[in-house]
Length: 294
Image 1 (cartoon, rainbow, N blue to C red):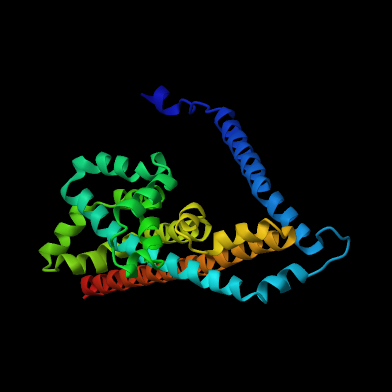
Image 2 (image 1 turned 135 degrees about the vertical axis):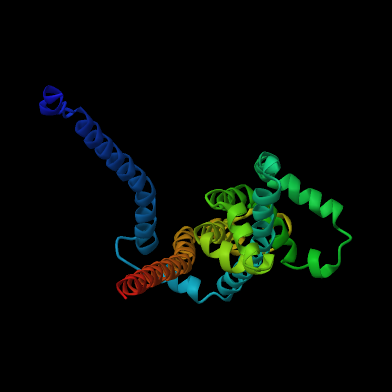
């Protein structure tokens, strides 16, 4: 027994540490290469938009775009379509995804397969099918950007559904719903006060993907004869190279800035709630200690 207790601990060796170091280096290299793959074209495009075919720096491409009324009209049109698509997507997917995980987990694979159909069926085929099948709908739908928002909800499903599905899968939906019902809360209150705060990251991902998809989609808007942000970009690119590159960079800014603001706001709220929860737990623990001392 003494020999067992006094025996030296087996040496783990440096193999594990070396593997971890190699893994970190490999990860850093891969992330650096991927970062360069995305940043180099953006930097090159920015340089060309300021110089063009001349050697000096000029802001003429940006001034022409910002003074063009059609630029602002197409931007506002795509923004309105994007907001409508985001709202419709959230209203459709949040209750559906929660219900599937709570009541019908067996059809989850079927829902995943259905959400991937827009990737299998070309958007041109979907658009022509919509025009042929729903041409008799009121002009308030077929003759307005409403039809674009409805189509974008379907076309963005492969990205939005799987994002929200992953967030819901990380929660124990059944336990949360049953706990809320045992406390007398209705399903609406459970969804609003219990599930949505825990699905914040998934909802944010859906918002980002849906809005970015609406700003960059070209084929459907062009077939339906709507001059959106992407359609106007293609029209400019056919005759004005510098203005087209400047347009693309402005589109990136209009996409990144709002989404960055939303991300920062959500992260701050999450941090405040975590801090508030920690303070509440500390207060409860202090009160319990005082009660025991008394």
